[in-house]
Length: 350
Image 1 (spheres, rainbow, N blue to C red):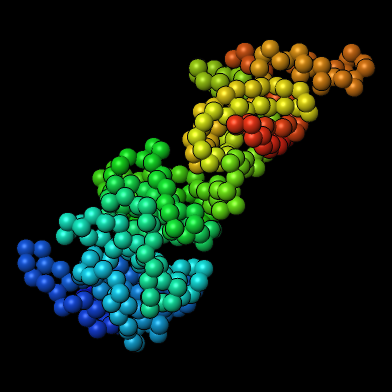
Image 2: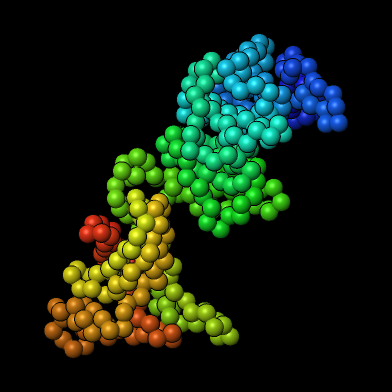
């Protein structure tokens, strides 16, 4: 717990002891007095490796549980509010820092990293807009993946802070004050100022690296889908909604443009459509349906090795008039600007 000193409890808060001297510049009186520890973090790799930052620009580190402290803010911008300190879970000496200067009409985005416990600092996020930073966090699965929350939105870096991209789809342009990635569900939870909580799946984002980003087009593996006889039927007797799978076709594109998607069984085309995609990660929804005009070719291919009439498959449509893929392995082809990539789609038998 932070005041002007750092306090520690070893019995769940019943008793507290100060484990630091005054880590501020001594406090400043006024209409809004300040001189308080505003950010604390202990290294997940080493017990007793502590960092503390204050609302008057001081950053200190202790490597021995608070017995001794070193000021590591001399080479940082002065007098700014330390909004977050994040000790890395990947390298013991690595620590991330964000500073916020809007209280002094300073709207620069200040984020830094140190690889040597704060002895020297490197500024990150050269392409971040003029938005004060409230939080910086590293991803628990990918050491190169960083999240930054500013007074105007959420940004992500897949190259450990060299540059950032906005994550803005479905997220209002409001101050982001905290971000947490659930370590089991791989979901990012975003806490905003005044607009509640937002949640998104970042499992594909965690797979992003420079190898992927160097490609013009890259498709991720498609999750297996369980076949159901009820596809195309009403979910409930009184409902107007029809049951059908929702399959995410996830791909990365270096540039925006038109993309042709083709679903094939061997060389037989079953469905084809065109999507307009953006630069970056794209999620295309597919419902495992087949174009009605291609049903005859689909049936013919399924029955090509069946001589007995009673053995042949006859496709039936659902209550919504659509036909769906039967269990099997299908090819999904993505074509953009003459570049073709493929992924397999497995429909598992029930």
